[in-house]
Length: 271
Image (tube, rainbow, N blue to C red; front, top):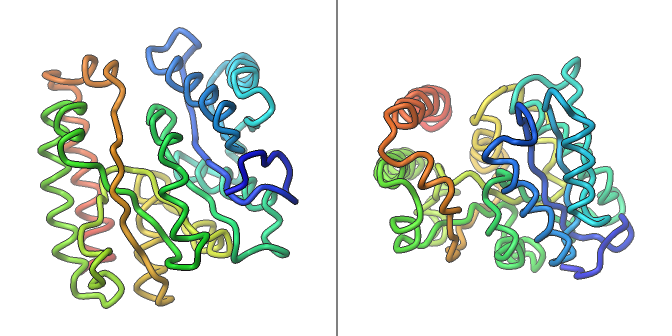
């Protein structure tokens, strides 16, 4: 991974994310700023697609925090709908930046939610197997100790349950039977892929969380692409744990998320 990449000729990895904030006073906005600051410190080229009502204010703040390493685009809802559409727009922008026609086997795109600030500290570990040719897709796995310590306890249990379910279903497919693919952390969120596979994500039309996962399932199942898991010592922001732990609103939201994924991912893609 080039540590000073700021142009398509030098850059080999782009971090992408999507944002939506009612205003810049939102409790999660400082985490996005922190991610951009860390991207600048780590010299990580970052693409953000934003759908905030006050887009200019959000864009300016994030780009200023990124000090030339962060580019923020307004979501084009005429083409890209929902969170899934924003992800596709970000991937398209990242692919354009990487110029994969010339360098498609030595570049990678990584997605992470903006509040997962610490992911920037582990990006080199996540993309290394892609850049060295060992695999095509990486889904990082949270170390269990930090997962339990730093996440809301309800989220720790619900996501472990879902991971067990999806990993059990995935074992029927050869690509998920490899040693480093048997314990995918499906509910974590971040993933990375060889940039030449971008069309697999761009072709999917889902508008929610499924747009993150289903493309890599199809890449493994239908295209015989290699997938691997890399365990990282990821620390979830304490603000998130404090905001969400013990709040029925968040446990209900996670139940709704699981219901969607059990249907779209479990029933339609892994069964």
